[in-house]
Image (cartoon, rainbow, N blue to C red; front, side, top):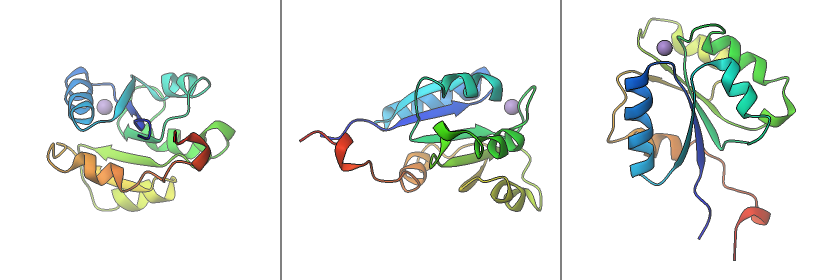
Length: 132
Ligand code: MN
């Protein structure tokens, strides 16, 4: 049995926090919630998530600035970031990729496919972290 993957959900809307974590927990992920990019950066000093699912519209530091800033943080090296936006506009995907995101999803999330989409973006864990 490998350990459950940890997804850090960076989302300021309480309803979206609840829905997203319920879906991910249902499908076998461990989740943590950060209400802002600043909170997410604090969280990552203590734990390394397997993936970050990040709302683009956040109070304080916006999601894309957050994604860009992760490039200079050793703890975030190799952690895939997936952007979520409620206002899908032309160029959003390109901006997200330019900021370092590996994926881009439009809200509302599709509760049937979200977990599979994220699972496909998580790199296999290193042999050392897999229990025999
Ligand atoms: Mn938001």
